[in-house]
Structure formats: C-alpha cells, structure tokens
Length: 192
Length: 192
DNA sequence: GTCTATACCCCGATAGAC
DNA sequence: GTCTATCGGGGTATAGAC
View (tube, rainbow over the protein chains, first blue to last red):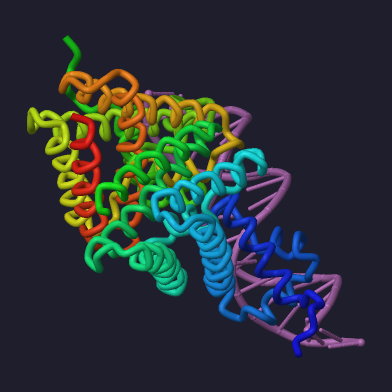
C-alpha cells in the first residue's frame, strides 16, 4: 500500500498547478515553483528532466482530475440533469469567491498561452477538455437523453462553464455563473 | 478631417493587440512589440510612459472595439435574434480557422493573466465585457424580449461565445462554436 | 535524490544624443 | 519624436559535489 506521505514530486506538481492557475504559464517561474513547493531547483529538474513544459503538462493533468472531481460532485447532487448542472455552477461560484476571485479554471490560462506552441502541454489540455465533456455526457445519457443530444449538450455545458467562470472572475461576481446555470438548466429541460 | 495615414502610435497599439491575442501578456515582450510595429523602443515609451501596463490597456481597448464590431456584424445579419447569434458563432469560427487557430478572443489570455494584479488593464477588460454584453442586449431588446431576460441572456451569450471559442481553439475545430450557436439559438427561442 | 553555483539570455525600463 | 546604449534583475537550464 502506498504511503500517504506527500513526496517531493507531488509537492512540486501541486505547487505548479496552483501557480499556473493563478499566474499562467509565462507568468510562473521554475524558481518560484521550487520555492513554493519547498524543493530545490535540482529536485525539480530531477523529477522533470523535460523542464518547464513537462512540468506544466503534469500540472495540467493534476488540474484535469481536480476539475473533473468538482464536476462529479456537482452532477452527483441531483438525479435531474438540469438541476445537477446548476449545482456545478454553484460549486464553481463558491470556490471562486472563497479564493478571493483567484482560483478560476486550473488550466485555462496555460491552455491559451501555449496553444499551438507546446505540443506536450497542448495534448494534456485536449485530454482534460475531453474528460470533462465525457463526465457531463455520461450524466445526460444516464438521465435518458439521446446519444447525439448528450454529446452535443456536454460540449456546450463545458464551454459555457468555462466562459461563465472567466466572466465571473473578471467581474468579481458570482452572477455570471448563476445566470449561466439557470440558462443551461432551461436548455437541458427542452430535451426531455 | 483626420488623416488616414497610420501613425506610429496606432501601429504600436495594433501590433500589441495582435501579440497579446496570440501570446498573452507575460509571453509578449516590449522589444518584440517595437520590432513588429516597426517602431523604436524609445517611441514605445514616448507614447506609453506608463510602460507595459498602459500599453496593454490600450491594446485591450483596441480588441474591445474589434470584437464588438464582429458582434454587430453578426447580429445585424438577421432580424431573428436566435439566428443572429448563430451568425456570430459562424463569424468566429471562420476567423479562427482562417488564422490557423491562432486568433481567438483578442483579450481573454491577457485578462486571465492580469486579473487581480494590474488594475489599469483590469478596468479595460471589465469595460470590454460590459460593452459586448450591451451590444447583445440591445439586439434582444429590439427583438421584443423583456428587459430582464435580455440582460441575462446577453450575459450568457457572451460567456458561451468565450467558452466555445476557447474550446474550438484548443481542439482546432469549428464544432464547439457551431454546437454552442445551435444551443444558444434554441435557448433564445424559448423566450419568444 | 538533494543541494549550490553559475552560464547564458532576455526582460522592463531609463538616459540622453539627435 | 526617434534612436542607441545600457542598467539591474530575473528567466531557463545545467554542472557537479555530496
């Protein structure tokens, strides 16, 4: 059985994930990461010989799991898929406000900064979006929606959550998330 | 009447706007800007004594007008507000694809990187989002929707467009934009 | 695996001639 | 208004002892 002691590698990945979420890829330095992770620069390059890109890709995968966990939590809170999706917007709003409007989507900023220029990172980003869509799609299918509708609605739900979280963050207000939650529920309701 | 000759200041703002769109705030250097704008570093600081932040704020305002123009063009293409919104998703998809998936929303990356840490830029970002919502809201009001519904739907439309453009960019596919366009039309249709 | 020191480069910003 | 030179600092990455 694995020990629960937090190893150096995991501390580095966690610190990177949080810093990328708040400062983006170009705004985060490896020295800052090693400082916040309480690891030396040598340790960082020992675990991630591919340098900053490899490190960022690992952090994106970490953020992927984190965001997927939030989605599963929200979607699991109700049988009704419309209500379940609005539960996700509430979870996002609370986390965003409680972080002082700092912690938006863990990967968006890095995704935008590296699109088309860092293949290793890009692949992790593409997989994250696909995972999140799959989580939503599964919920809609389980609720009895058709296969095509579920797949398309899942894509729209993830896009809308991303956009609403961005709007809420720059406005420092939960409102964009709540309004989007209401409209997504209404949209899903038209498919029953 | 103003001359149409492109002055140095305008060249600098244009170059900055394009570079921020593609590389983000931290990923774009002032030296690179001066190079692409064919202006010297001295000229850049002459027109923007506030440095990189002031320059970025001006570029955000430029992107604001650009994106608003696209919205007005799409929204003006049909009397029906639902069809008009999907026209916007089509315009975004074409521009994104034709740029080799490089030119997404002109301000998103910079907005995320500077939120909570560069007040001058943040204000320009907040104003841009408000402008875009206002353009959509006006269209919905003109189509006969209620005041509250128009305001809320406008917020959701802008959020959804932002999220869908992000998804389309990382997936290098027009599909997220087209699917979102279809769903937004359906949502708006439920309010007639 | 961990640590320090350092090579090499580019960053934002400024000074001051023209 | 435009230009060049430069300052001080921080960036990524590596070397090599322990």
